[in-house]
Image 1 (tube, one colour):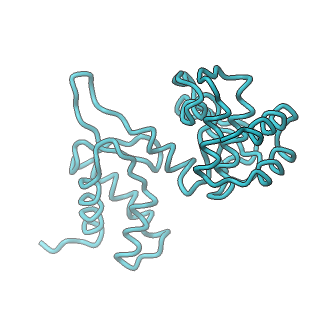
Image 2 (tube, rainbow, N blue to C red):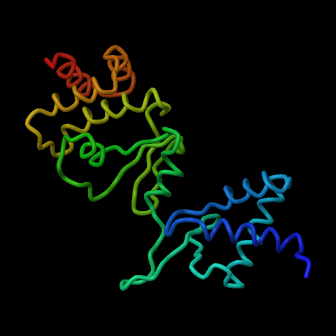
Image 3 (spheres, rainbow, N blue to C red):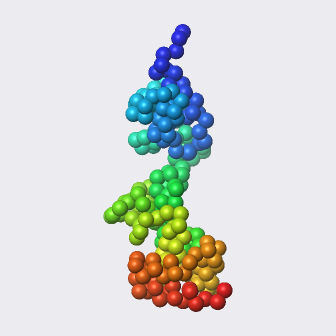
Length: 219
């Protein structure tokens, strides 16, 4: 029997879905982009065709391990002795809030990542260009807007200044936190003049004082 156009789309989408890793987010927009590029459909029609295809795939059980997480986001699961695996939230955070150097983790998580604290954060906070104002809570995590636009250039500067800002709020359990930060500054080849300018414009006086200590560190 000749395959209809719609069933052809469904089978194409099903093949892609089946090739995805377990727990990895599957986004309708990415599937629609693929369909548009390979069929000549405009993106709006490809998006509608993709949504219809995913509904059919689930109704006909064409991919039994496929699950819908939220609108526009799916994932494949696998059964374990503790139940089905869920979506990889770290990947969702990366894709939605951080990819392309538009965000980074701050607070306790940043201090841990930089080696200033050995304590794992109980609650994680991220700074992201996705937010212009306010605070958003998602997946038991907090997301806040940046002090200035985050990009490949500004990101390491903001991380250093955030760490200096959090030194009085977060347990620091290394012998010389300034030595740890100074090594990071050198590794990233950061300019202290830029650090000083950003600290002066965006941070408080306490951060400025700690930056002065960092600048005078003999490394």
